[in-house]
Image (tube, rainbow, N blue to C red):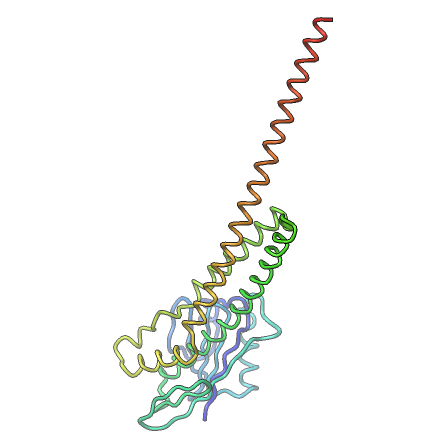
Length: 261
């Protein structure tokens, strides 16, 4: 039995710096990922969005690896979100269960697919927590609007909240490629089967859609808040203009009255 363990260790990891400095043997790379073997049948998978996944490594080995990676992390987390999957080897067998995977051999590309999907699952957990918190915060404003008939958030805070939501939406779109299949699966039926089974078992697509739907609900609410805020500001400007006109009329009236006197 072998273990795959994925950790969300930071907001982001500098892939370019890791590639230049890390001592392990590089097996695969692109602009967002680095896949290493640290020793025989031991693998480390690093993702730009702050995820690190380990295969067949002991806890002390993982701790050493995380310390090695820490200088290349942005906003390193003291408390790390994680998940694990057990991997078994049985000749001529390829099966995926919720908490374990059975592979026919210890093929490095099969292992990479298990590590990739486990990491995506942990990332989805993190984004699910973030979007749930954002939705709760949005609901507090809509509840206040329902009860009081007005918003309890200033224009500046609303703009910052909108920026926060948009940044999270962009991070999800950039870093989670749930609907894309790695190139290695395009011409290998067995790898493609494994990849699809992993996505289905981890329920990646439905979880991604749930997060996406939450973001859309939040965006709709924020657009409504912005419209209300704009209308309020427009009404304020209209009253300012009216008051200025009244003052001007009064000033003219007084001037004419003085001329008559």
